[in-house]
Length: 236
Length: 232
Image (cartoon, rainbow over the protein chains, first blue to last red):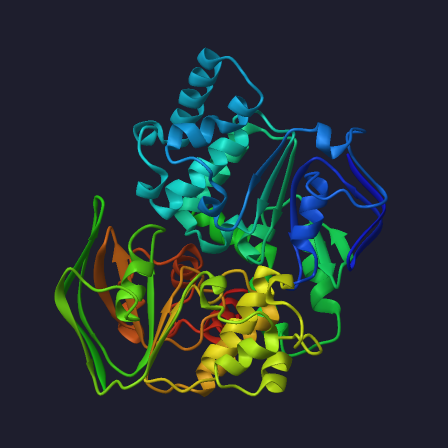
């Protein structure tokens, strides 16, 4: 379990939150604290209070992170070097790194691109390269911070199948997309720096609809998880 | 008024873009896979890039604007109020539209990327332009902001509006569908005819078309009505 207790950072305040293993969507309005919450779980921010991942401090847990524009966070020129970087930083043996990079590149479909400069990759390939770098040291937590914002359905399906095969215990992803929320095991909704609600995609959808009817109600009908399950059942 | 792409090409490394077509007043949707060349085409049309060959003709178009995916690229000042003023807009209504009331004096870098995008788009689409190119305007935006942008574009359908997006869940009413595939621009056609022949439509549209033969448009209103018919 990821356990968060009595945490405050800026406007974000979380008295008590438990996150079970699985796919967890973090959603909520712009500026509600999604990225801040993810940064705390990743150990990038260390606020007052308590955060633990299976009883361990986040800074002692292996965390993979892919952002909205992954190539903005890449520090190496060559695809191979970027994917290998998490292992090189912890001084793994070169032969082991070489084998692991080729292994994950094969899984992700980037073998032919390993010697190419990152800038020559397409947008989708850059996301896959960032995903490979995030997964190469077998993280216990994988965080995708609105990585889906600019991706088409085909590329997202590729990302999904890679993540499934990687079997990361905790997958947390911030998203605004209803099709992504529908695929989560649990959903955490943030608003104004606080956890507004937490539940399954269907519970969250029903609770959202049952609130006071407003101008967004018709638009919310397109967020129905049942609709998206039907879409992907006939069009996987 | 029309925008004419006359046999334009653009090359970068091993990628080559080819585009040919005429954009008339109305709302145009350009879709396609990541890396297919949509943003590059947007930058050419928005005058940020020049084609290697061919010409872009702006017949009767005297003003144009390009919204890039990175809202940071558009910043010219350091705080919200000055940024809004740099667009020639009145700060208070824009701050209200962007959901940022009371933050006019804040440093722009204190905003989340979503908030920054809301601010940028609120400044941009409240202007009057003959040609507006919006590259992934809905990416990273919450429900409220998407609703406002879509509604605003529906209520102010002036000139040529080009929306580059793969997200079809909050679109305004679309007139023409275009697709980029491996660097080549193809006209799918006017939405009323194109929906039945759009073989590479996104999954939600394919699902609706398979279950509801009355879908006549791509606006979120059209999609909601179709989904309601399917689930009746």
